[in-house]
Image (cartoon, rainbow over all chains, first blue to last red):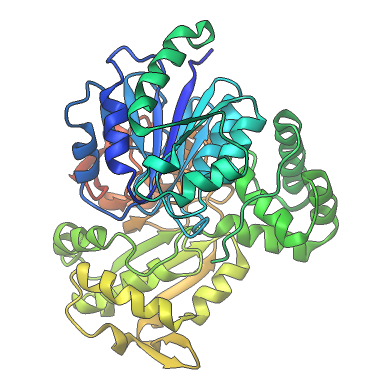
Length: 191
Length: 282
């Protein structure tokens, strides 16, 4: 029986918000975290930058990585990141919503695999990527959180999610991390 | 590449067993074996097939595929697409130049296998690299794929001109020292790969899942193909690859793949861990 999962998607303006979220998570956070940021290639710089100061282990995901607590998995450049039960899988399918990695691909496959044992978080960005994925998470019984567009550098993506009615919670950037901690640690079903 | 998102699925459990029924029917009818493809990516790719075929569910797709071989070819092509750019991961190709080429130079004939070549971009990239390294004349490149449609496109070597122009940056980052545009002719928005590159390049049908060893190679590239297979199938394909490699032969995998947890992990020495180049040593 596997633990739950947190999935986070973001684009323009999301990097600092993601760092802030991860800084709020303790080393004992019981759910793995999988992330899609719209990104270009680098030599592991992004993972290092994001992982600085957090006790969680942040790395680019590899194909068939096992989802483990204490770890943050980033979609690598130019691959889609999929959830396949307790594992991650990669794909080189064409761009979705103009992006590869695409947030929708992560969110939809996570929703199918984890259903109600899932929290999906959509951050700042200007694309429509992630809205359909968040809808699927909600449809499958998961909890959806959207960064308050008013606090987003690029508000279009979170605003689209709010407008589509798929946000269970709309939170300013600084409150997302503490909310995840409170929700995940409090809920018995996650442990 | 068209962008689509899959149609909203019905209940996931039902869709899993529908997929099993579909892959089972395809195997019985045609012998193509998708039963051990990785579930998540297979589901998404088959959903794209549903959109292509304008069908509602996998049961309907099964009905059509079983009775219509052209539909089977279309599905096969969809499940075969895996590489989308010339010199994708340019650093891999520059690592190939540094780590593999010096060793390949020691052979009078160099046999390379691009396994799962799809529409051919990687095969042409390798051909070009060998040409620039002065190895092409004594090279034989075998590029194989399960899809006849993909192979036809690969053989033709005709790509979108604007794609080729954007691949120039990759070519340069991969250490290309010439003029990329000399290797294709441009016409009506299309780029046709030069016949020079095709002389020692053979495209042929081969299915990694069901077919066996057909030659011994000094270099095998199997990049971003096995990500679509489950662990059991990956192990079987690694067995095939291992037995297709000469001793000290070189294997190249995709940027985020690895030999970890595969049965032949200890038979290879890592030449370049960042760029996934391995040498068979036992």
